Length: 254
Ligand SMILES: [Zn+2]
Ligand SMILES: [Zn+2]
Image (cartoon, rainbow, N blue to C red; front, side, top):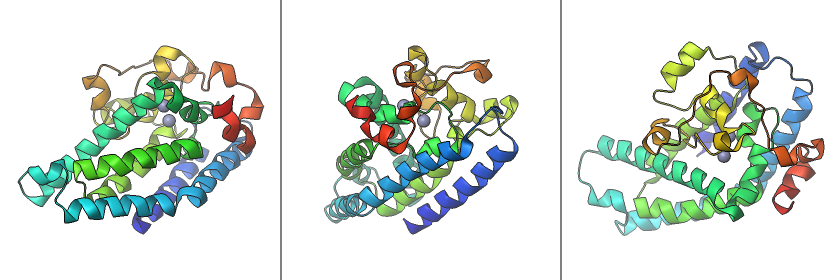
């Protein structure tokens, strides 16, 4: 997982730099303060959950591998086929989990900390409430052994997921022509911007993490021509007090 951390940090630095030079929304006033708050929350999550939960997950993986437990153990084929299936299954799980975070009221309380960001950029990719992180690890603790995903397959998935998540949250002015080509396969900035819109039908769409086709398969895909006009955040939590570290931490209890 150290490799994933290094890939994530390197991707973050490159994408943050790119959105500084080629911003999509140019009228951002307090980018540094905004970024510092989100990074502080991401850092807090790393400190609070960075040790206990990964050890739990590793134990779950080890147990499933030792006991040949999980869906992938029932599928025969060469390792690369299993690696592809593990990647696709886990990405499907990510889609379903994200959708549940919008549909189940208790989960939404925590997930909305991610959605109260009124100026979406790379740092939004690490803006998650510690409660959501804890719940997501607990869910993974059950799902990873059920799928029978090995440690290596999980590392491969995370190594691809993190740069893609940073990319689709970024404020990089990625040309629409390229966005259209890329979003045929993966989630792009213009696709995920719709998910961060204030409008209910839009923030209840585009749940995919890596592969964009889950939203097409499950009819939750939404597209907008005028992505420049999207207003980010949640209508009921617009005040600046919800943007600081304290505000983000108390958001679920509002
Ligand atoms: Zn969401
Ligand atoms: Zn997001």
